[in-house]
Amino acid sequence: CIHLQDGIYIEEEDFQEAGKAFGAIRAGHFTLLEATNTKFDELGSMYMSGASGTYVDPLKAQKVGLVPPTVKKIFQVGNTSLRLATDLVKENTYLEELQEIADSIRAKHLMFADDETFEKIFVQELAYWNEGMPLETYNMMLNRFDIQNFPTNIEELGVHDQVMRDIPDVGKQGLKIMKEVGMTLSKEFEGCTKCEKCKKVCPENAIEYEKENGEFLINVSTGPCLGSRCLKCEVNCPEKVFQLKNMMLENPD
Image (tube, rainbow, N blue to C red; front, side):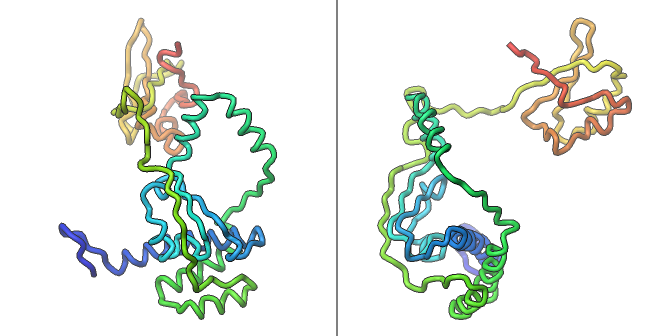
């Protein structure tokens, strides 16, 4: 058990859980390389985006296995979705160019969950991180599966940091935090007996009622509503008239 600060400790179980995450990422790298018939020493550059492309130290990440040891250059590009959205707002012709690029790419979807290579490597990763399997034994097991060995030497890594924070430019008006998200869906259902059963069973308290011009409207707030994952409102409607998919916007204009 390691005490960090302010009563925060890292215990053996925490290391094991971290090892599972590291192992899954490394198994993913392995699987992609095997699927494309690429060797570790052929890796020249790697791009890190999102949170890892902003805050993760690539040198430390490489030492713990989150970055392949043979990569020579790391480009940290941050929030690529936001950067692309910004570029599209500034120049909408980029969308046509991106579509042309997308059409020219030959892609193959690789599902790790049912991939045999990923499964074989991840089992070795669990043994490595949680059971203390030596790297020599790890590579010996990979040889049995006719999978390339994990390199033992770490290449000198060049880091090219292209961002300083998640949102580099917030504009003149700055950022606004939305306290409430979603919208209100409203509808009167023919055959509804106003029993209020749907409101009572909603686990998120997302349903309210409203009387307007003689109509009994059921309002659903889409923010807290669990949608198709729940549907307790539909299941518990005694008249079977409540249908979430038939709801409409309260103010469609």
